[in-house]
Image: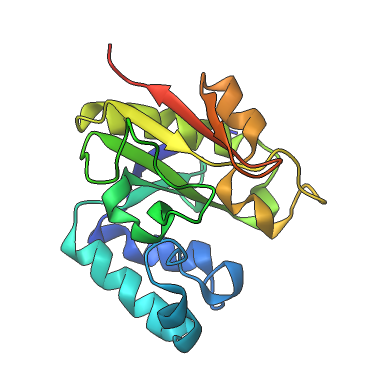
Length: 194
């Protein structure tokens, strides 16, 4: 599929809303899973999560990238930015926890934390296109490392568990495993120093 990938800015909010739909993607998450503490997320409904994410987009800088098809419809989303921007991704008990050589406080360490692909567009290489654009975006914005914690295998190709991405997609982009705290969920890294 031919894609155009661009940052999510306030001017593109309507496209993001259209992509996520009335339910807010992944059970009303609105891509707040790694942004809000679990207690807050559980108290929130999808409207509160939507409002939170909208305010985050309006505050800037862009929290991720949107992919558009040749007809101009948003078909994919990838959340990417400094680790510090996704605080729940950094909890010590998570498989995504930072390593000592790349602390969350280091603004040069970025994370790819979430994907969302429109159901009808899945299986067409959109994740690969988004990840390639995310690598460029991170590099252009001063990141020295880009990390991810994908899943090796999902029970189904369209599994909601793939919101963290597929290990295969990251391997193809040059990421390498740097830690394995849970089988099937490697912490992966790509150096961006060029």
